[in-house]
Image: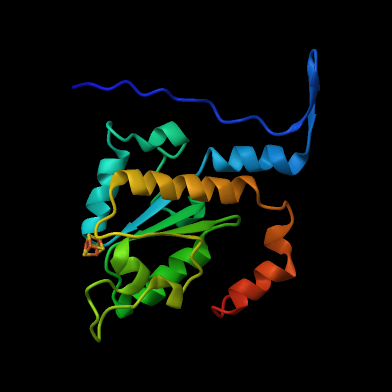
Length: 183
Ligand code: SF4
């Protein structure tokens, strides 16, 4: 049975408004723009990637959230989505992709394998991508359903929306990267 979905526009930033004008803060406007135009780079190595394809398809339709433009070029992406089993050999490549992405950038880790190695507690599988790159949001499950992927995207949008304008040049952010040996 067909179901109808009501789509609500995003809330406008807080501020003062009157007839013909609105005053708000620059970081709120930038956050709103960033949150609603995320360009994902799908780093998919196995079955979780199939679930992501379902998320992109017409039923779940990720483009409703402004993220229909996938990028396979790190320089033209700001959301790294890691899904699937990541072998230890793949770790340095994943890290290189992360480093090639321009700021600001966020990382979404999808599924048990990418988050913790999942069922593959073996000598060859990385036991979580946060051993090589910082992660912003984890999606649990094996595989997670598309609804969970959408939930993860919404969480990333909240992070983007509320990020202080100078966060990426702050000492706090540099310290976070330094923990991973990234300058
Ligand atoms: S978490 Fe499950 S579904 Fe996802 S890549 Fe691993 S085994 Fe496949």
